[in-house]
Length: 200
Image (cartoon, rainbow, N blue to C red; front, side):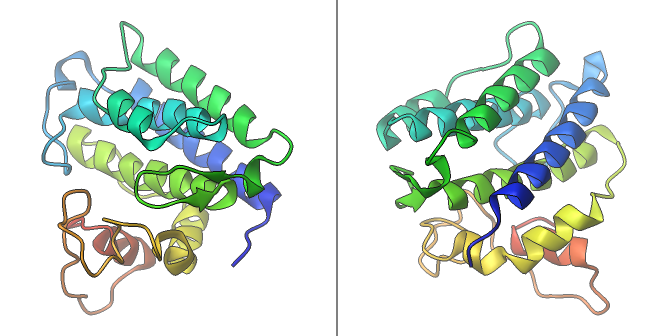
């Protein structure tokens, strides 16, 4: 599938805005609370999204997977988590909008991908981590239905060929837990979350 750049940019702006709202609703005492991502507390989860935006911008500008893995371990929030996310997200969006960025093949550590697919992966990551943050902080867990539908409809395009992704038959489940069995009357959001290793 070849997703429209305009559609992808609109989806990224929408999910970034949703995630930013959720970050601004975090109470001071919640930053060390656990999240559905077992290895991360709330602060580490938000830091991961800031890192992801910084890393993807780096990859689009010629960075490599070794730099990706180094940045992934750093705290990216400083004293202003919401401002850090806003700045990283805006800078990354601008990088994706540069001429030729969507067709550029980057050194993604889980297999080479073009910028278009990289943008799709960032959208999916931000959508699902919005739910993770809501579950961790007691915020509203309903996600934007249009974003859920897009991720669900494009799941195979997004994750086919991505090592350690939810469709990798040889995955060690270090990044995505194994999907549970589908329940009866599963909603689109429940299906998307389940396929990404969550237990909604």
